[in-house]
Length: 160
Image (cartoon, rainbow, N blue to C red; front, side, top):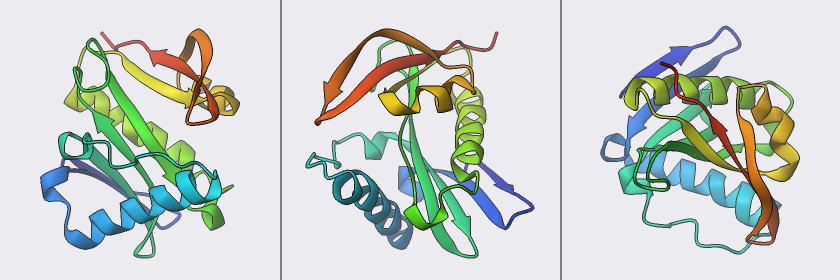
C-alpha cells in the first residue's frame, strides 16, 4: 500500500499497486466500474483495457464496503509526458456525500508522491468540467466523443 487515510465520516482511502490487490478488492473495484460506466451510463466498452496491471488503484471504503474507486497511471501509459487519473467511480447510493471530492484530493496527493514533477492529465466527461476545475484542472483542446459520451482533456500542472 502506498498511502492511506481515514476520515471522520467513516470513509477510509487506500492506494494499492495492482499486485497488492487481493481477489475480493479487485472483484469489487471491477464490479463498481462496470455498474457505473457500463450499466448506469449504458456504455458498452472494454473496461479491461490492459492498463490495470500497470496502475495504482484507489479504494474508498465506508464501513467495510467499497463506495468509490479510481486508478492512477504513470507517465508513458496513457500520455507520454503526464501521469493520469481515470476510472473515477462512486457507488450511486453514496453520491452527494463528498466521496468524489475526497477521492480526487487523495488521488492528486498520491500522484504528486508517486510521479513528482509530472502534470496530471485526465479525459473528463464534459459535464464534470466544473468538478475537476475545483482541483486545478484546466480544459485543453476541443471536446471529443468517447464511447458515445462527450469528453474533454484536462490537465493539472506539476507542482514544482
